Image 1 (tube, helix red, strand yellow):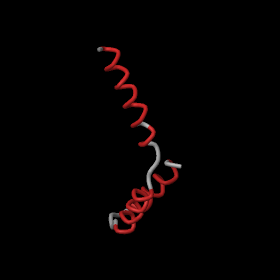
Image 2 (cartoon, one colour):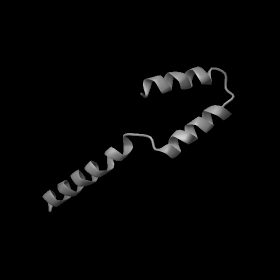
Image 3 (tube, one colour):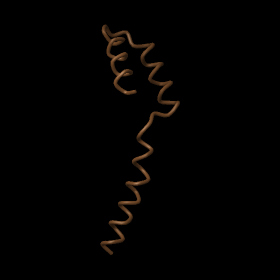
Length: 55
């Protein structure tokens, strides 16, 4: 029983982790829209730094 629980947890982890690695096209477009509509001072600099560090 314990080995079945460990096996199912390992399988779930192996399947779910790769899906979190890269942003999808919808998330990328959403971030660009958010960046375009953001009016806070200094936000453009912050976004540029995030873009450089995320590559």
